Length: 558
Image 1 (cartoon, rainbow, N blue to C red):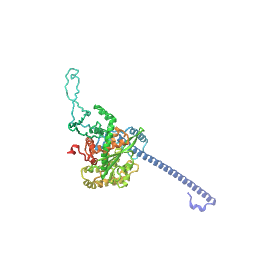
Image 2 (cartoon, one colour; image 1 turned 90 degrees about the vertical axis):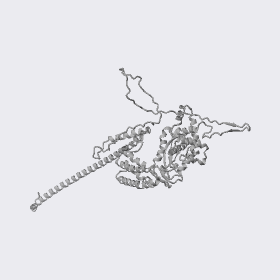
Image 3 (cartoon, helix red, strand yellow; image 1 turned 30 degrees about the vertical axis):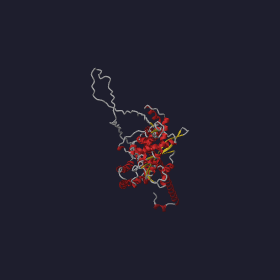
Image 4 (tube, rainbow, N blue to C red; image 1 turned 180 degrees about the horizontal axis):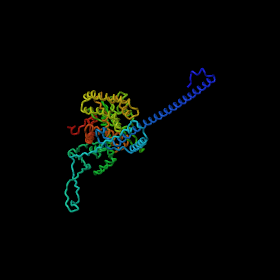
């Protein structure tokens, strides 16, 4: 240690040596400080690099988890398309699932998605939840075995006994009957053809040589062999039961009558022309309604001379389920363009219940009121819950379920009563659901399946809320979807329309058949009676034959 008191006694040389020594020590300390600073800088760089690496891994992990969620959601949707449930209810609500096949493309898509999921799940993933696995455990609902309904007791029974050839055991002892197993099979006897002999007597006057004879009854096909009953059977078989004409040809042949397919086609064409005025009258009726449902479904159309098919569309328009007059009209068009719906509803002003397809947007700009479909909003949350058991989706489904509970209670009420209850109970539920979604949405990332499900409803909130302000407006568009479903199911049988004219003819007949069903009529009985009366019915009174006004010929004449 340097003793300050000794400094005055030191010589000049000693002081210089001491100064040099002190300078050397200071230089060493500066070097040490510089080295320490370099070490700290190196450690800071290492920490920064580690933080960047960790951030990159976190980003990759988030992307991987988001991708897994997206693929899991997509594969759940495809599986539900292939093995679709008959109703969109949660597992706890029951409802057996029924299988329906949608073609080979679905199988290829499922295989591709499963392979990508396996590759993603095979990669190491960080534990971000603190549990043993960051993934949500799969939920397997117990499968219920469907019970086949008993055959109707009023059907006649034929007992067929199946007994052993011998009732003696190999040991020689007589066997005793201790019970039986019974299995019932539903049998079918083909229809029976009969011949109507229309005998028109000729009456002559011997005195004045005058000949009198009753006029021939009028038929849809004059000088043809079919009665109205046979024509109605052909139309119902083709357009209600979706039996192609070649199958009907085989059915009639098994019943003992050979009717060429070309003849059946000619009959269908003639009937289509005769029934078109009724379909036009139905269209005018729908255009006079205040509430109209709209939807569309694809239909393949054969391109003449090319052997290829072109995707066309069958547009559907119907009065609301609460309307006094129930009717539906189908319009066959060669595309899905918005010009078709604008042409059909040209000049119409009212409330249009539809999905979010862009083709309807131009109508809303022209003054048509939009009413959204709650079933589409519910389906987003249902698919999300089915794929991941999301608690947020379950909560949203609870809100929507409460809305539908109110609607079930209002099914048979008047529009005024329905509106009053909706503005009380339903409005409260809608407000609570809306506030809850707005709050939850701030906590979600934009690319998550839950955020997309919420955004669908939030962006369409005005349309979804329309039913709160009009008792005649339903909560969803299921009414038209139920009417268009039989046609969509029948596509697998008739495959395509042979031409644009054939598509328009099919749309006209389908309009009458589905409207008859809407009014609780048997399509066969309705068409049979209408085809009998059309040849002599006055054109200005065509509305009398529409399904909602129709009465059988005997009742109408009485």
